[in-house]
Length: 221
Image (tube, helix red, strand yellow):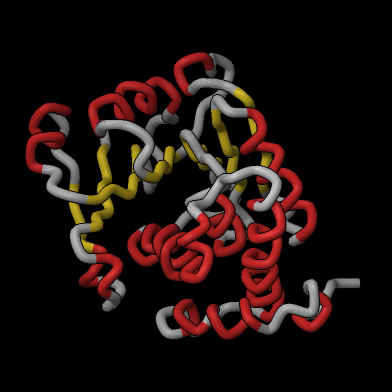
């Protein structure tokens, strides 16, 4: 039997915060709504034990972390059966929100810090997110797997992300390549990377002040 919103730590606060999600996404299933509602209290609880999110960000958890992650879902449609790697997932962003959004896609969350993966594992289990696996590793050490897409959020310079991602990508899938979330003036970083990414301004996708100078980038080989 699936849990109800009312059963999730008795927490209605997270449901109110979720209005920033339903402002932009109107077709969530009941199960997805319940899974998204579960995230804020679960992360708040785990953040007291292992600091994976800035404490000042918890009051804007859905905007700063969940909605930010879902910017990817506004521009890319991941098909059933695709395999997506979250490179340097930290506490699970963008991988966890994307796994809820695309329940028929498998998300493999990779990080070099094992305690952060422990948080991801526990939150995925508590929120009944079945399409997530984790791996304690650096991306460059992964030799035995290929993915349709690599996603990442603010982990390293674009050139490094592409260097690590390119050997892990399958060929001829759509979408394909590296999709990453970044902020600030990217002019020099993009030039240094020698990549030619497609770039979206997230503030034009989500009309919220937080997304000023935040970008979505897509690199293909």
